[in-house]
Length: 94
Image (cartoon, rainbow, N blue to C red; front, side, top):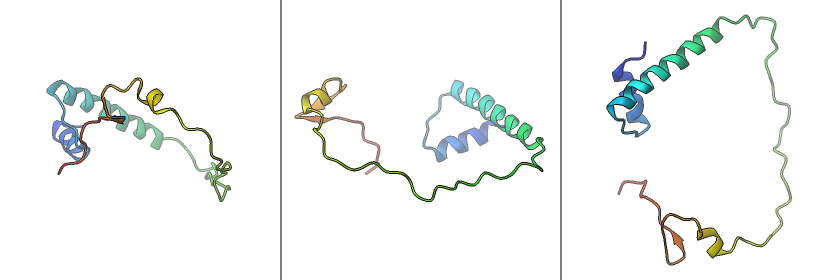
């Protein structure tokens, strides 16, 4: 069973601030996920060959210059903008 302290520890590691009702929801959801994983452990995989990816390199397309998106068009639906730039919330603590 996933307890409250475990949910709070995971939230802290993920830098999430959870409300009281969210803690209960995540507690149930994490418990459901772990129960599903336990079900997978019951599968007989003895005669199942492991999957090994045989592609050694990622196929790439040619890097060809193309016209860029117009600045006005790019900023058209931005919730906040200033002097041609997107305004976004700070995500790094100073």
